[in-house]
Structure formats: structure tokens, C-alpha cells
Image (tube, rainbow, N blue to C red):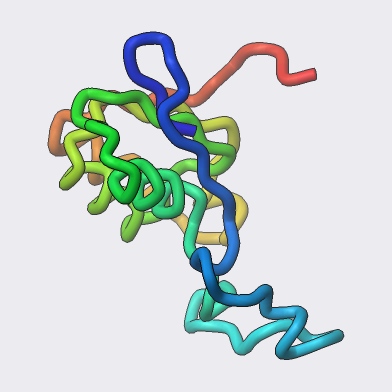
Length: 124
């Protein structure tokens, strides 16, 4: 979810790009082929979908805050930085979820001045 000036300006989801189909339709029971990291080869991450939807609809996202379930991966982090999003708040570690040693996306964003924090509040 992208927010700016206390308003939601866009939402995103982990899944295929708008106008395509869900992998389960083409590959029932097994899902789509996986990339080298074990991720769906068709899907976009929620960050990418939220950013693309906002830009497609003419929203100015510079200076916005992005809320995500998992910390951004390195690919999403590059897009977040390029789009001048100022802050990212995440709930869970992407590195832990993927079994990798380093939170690459978070390190990248912090290195280039994007504020990143893990949400520590109540979620239920």
C-alpha cells in the first residue's frame, strides 16, 4: 500500500500483471515454472504492482510511504529508490522468508537514504 499525505494512493498484490492470468489457470496443480530463487516466473511483487498502478493512474508517488508485508527484495528496492519513495515500513523479513543471509533490499534502501523500519505493533 502506498500512502501520501495521510491518504492511500495505491495498493498492490503479489501476483500476475493486470490483464494476464493466474498461473494456476495455465499450470493447474503445479503452478508456473519457478525462477532461480524459487519464485513464480510470472508474478510481480506487491511493491511493483502498487507503484505501477499509481503511476498508470497519474498519482505522484514521490515522497510517499510504502507499507509491505515482507521487506523489499533487491529488485523492488531499486524501483522504490528510483521512484523517490521516502519511507518503507515492512512486517516480516524477506531474507528469513527466502532463507538468504542478508536483507539486501533494506540495506540498499538505507544506503541511499530511504527510511526503512520494521513494524513492531499489534497486527491482529
